[in-house]
Image (cartoon, rainbow, N blue to C red; front, side):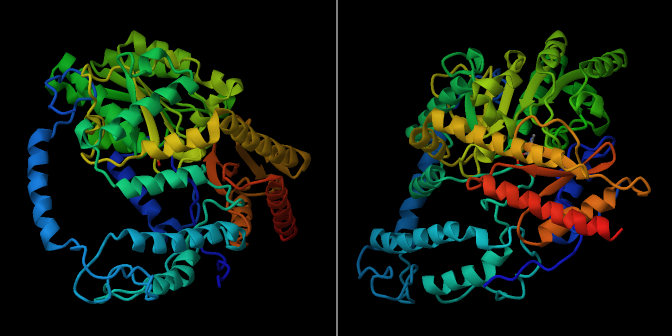
Length: 572
Ligand code: PLP
């Protein structure tokens, strides 16, 4: 059914850290370009009920129309919608029970968008389809072939309803070949975004309720479960009690780490402007390292931080790409003497390139000394800190104003589910999460996280994390045992950064050699790995985190890389 990926358009598998000196405007354009298939394939180069009157809480930076008005308005609308387009309940159920397989009506003029028996029939078939997909996932090339779909699909939407069978055929023949299989046991690229039965069921239930829980009253269970589950999680991570809802703080689920950092940056900006005056925006300075995720740079642009006030502190191999606190202090002193206002410092636990861990205690002290907002991005590595033996990576979190990690990366909670905690939120007894995020509407995301925690339990989740770290350790040992390779940075979690050593005569220090090795491995369809560039070296990134990965997958991946390396070195 599926063809192997054809070899060898050039592509970029690096997820970008901030780019020193970049205009954030360019950063946005680059990010957009990065996600565009054609641009990606370029060769590597070096080069509550009532609106709260409390405007003082840092996260209360967004206001919407009073919820009560909104509810009246929408209640009026839905009556009209109900008579105009919803099914009237008459007529036979047609959900495949009659054999047509049509889920949307067969042209009788009456759309029946939700019929319980139809859903049961179609839903069972979809679950069967998905279970079969997971059973056969290893047979698909892990990395997809983009840029093919336009020719396969019609230019306009169908006038008449298609059947579910037609749709399944198209999914099999036209969609699946263009899917990169993030849940494949042979997926080792970027950072994982793993799914699970529990996470999946939670997504289903969330889709079923399909609430828009912007305020407490729009679905109290959604807000209250989110508060409870985020408190549970904070306790699992042993976050300081100020991050709990029982104190002044609390947690909230954002879509992504990018949204999380934007939200806290805006809160920090407004806190600082209240202190220094609204006209001080051009003086506000943000500090991060050159390993910080580019999401911060994007957030700065959105928040109106002047591009020249975004300090990117250089890191190097001597500190394994963690930022040096002295360098951050120096940059702050220099800015203060120029009359600028340092206001935000971002540390990372598990950087995107090499999973480096910034020194939290020192950075926290610096931020405190200068009354700056201290944010910690632990998007990937945060999950590991539920294990006592990895919790030390969060030492220093006591000083943070905000802390973020993605449960949708390495915590078996289907995308999207990014957990953000703040120390100071709001004094109201009822939380309206619309004031803690960019959009108004929000999904019932806490269900899936709750189900993951309930159906697996903390002990199993800890074992699951440990297993991945052990598998990565095994891979690391295999790399070390082959003298043709080197491990480039010490492994902290389940990411191994390594490369094929180039011959001494190699002109670009193994840049092309390692690109070619990655491409050969990925083009085989058998595995998918990604890369980064550290100190000018093209470095291969191998991350264990997919839900089905076992020891045999690690061994097979290494054998493939060794074989491809032998071929490449033989052809030099
Ligand atoms: N921060 C770190 C350390 C990351 O590794 C990533 C993505 O991999 C992000 C932030 C951005 O994550 P998101 O896609 O949730 O915005």
